[in-house]
Image (tube, rainbow, N blue to C red; front, side, top):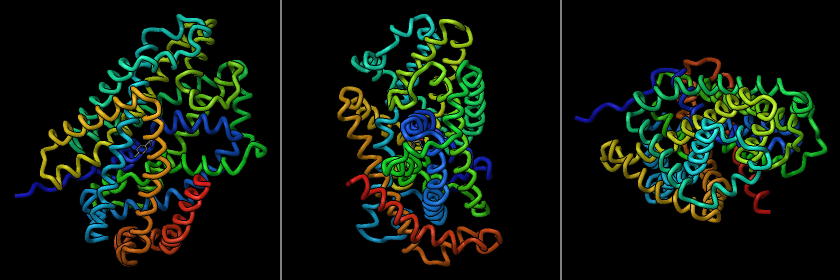
Length: 442
Ligand code: PFF
């Protein structure tokens, strides 16, 4: 007899799992440096608008596809598009998260190494001059990054192997609240530093002179990345949501917690950057070069506090990366167990092996790493998002969409805004995605 499919326990469990996928390196690493490059508060405003108007409808489209199918991603897409095309599109949604996991877990490995360095007080014992350029030295010899990548991947597998309820749900239920506490602690520390108010000003006073066409592309791309759109994750997680749950409430809860966390991360990082007298637009090196430098700089006058802050900070990054990587892994695991009849343990072992090899290649070559990242963000995720809104908005019958978003009309509030949600899914989201594609091509 077939064992019944697992389900998430309730609304809170669903939001925690989704938030776990959404809250990650994107919030703590990408968001603050994009913010720094694009005029602070102005970027936040554009980002919030895109998240609510474009990303949330795409999220709901994927959620509807997942829950209506109650099946893995490949099958979910296959129900809507029968034949070879549906099979291929479905497989694309299974491959994308594994592709992302291969390099995402490399960055997760870096965060593990930096956490260990923080615990050994390396940033505090060294002078800022010694710290500077440390990241280039760290990745120049790939063996330590490879070991950290494997360790990080191993921990992710360790969570996923215990199942949806016993592994993912249980892990996210404590790690997400913990993450919020850690980031609030860092924000309080950062705001207490001398000169921090200049950073606060930067975060609350929009500087529209820095806004260019690029700001909009950055904000939209970041919003997609942060909500893990177009990767099969939302479809897969939603397939584990009970029919009685409110999908719209879960989607809104996830988007708001993701936004809130990103803004909190901005408040945790930017005031410290200003306090150390550094320009906020240092780019992608912000997390692994600028921040250790800042901890070392602050450690000269307040070593204990800076040491604790560094440990908390890198622990938060490690945890955030982990909650996202388990979601990336689950898509493939659900596919292999349901479609190929594999045991969960074997599916995890197989995917560990695949991502271990691919991630190791990324550790050895920055061009492989960059290629993997840009192919995922610019092609795979965009394609996946476009496919999802077309499927939910144009292929799925109107009544089926209505049934999923309103629980058959029982959720009156959702029924009242159904037409607006459908317009956002059918027209606004596809146009937004096409604009993103065209602008990056141009
Ligand atoms: N949302 C994650 C973050 O912000 O770090 C990153 C991510 C996870 C992207 C899963 C895509 C994905 F499929």
